[in-house]
Image 1 (cartoon, helix red, strand yellow):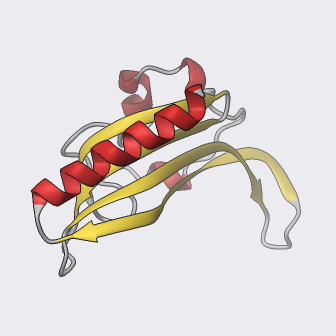
Image 2 (cartoon, rainbow, N blue to C red):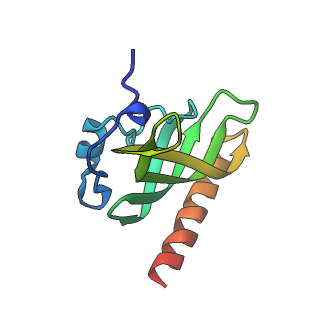
Length: 129
């Protein structure tokens, strides 16, 4: 049985800007090759593009069980999502949201690696420039 970090509440948002990969893994957040993302894909590589106190943006290379199994996504982790009661009112707790979007899928690893490298370079240049 695996630990589901997405259903855990925290009394304060996690400051991911100050957290090492080890500290993120301690919280159950997958950031290392071989770990499963919430969408079921396995991380092959991840390039962190930028961090903010409660947000972490990266490009991730992963393999899934789809017809075109290799993918690169833009991944965003937010740790300041207010938990809500059934009636919609806020509690004093915070949840983590981990989203992979804008995926590019391919059936061969070489193309996926090339896309991952290109996207990593492109987004790094945008952040620096």
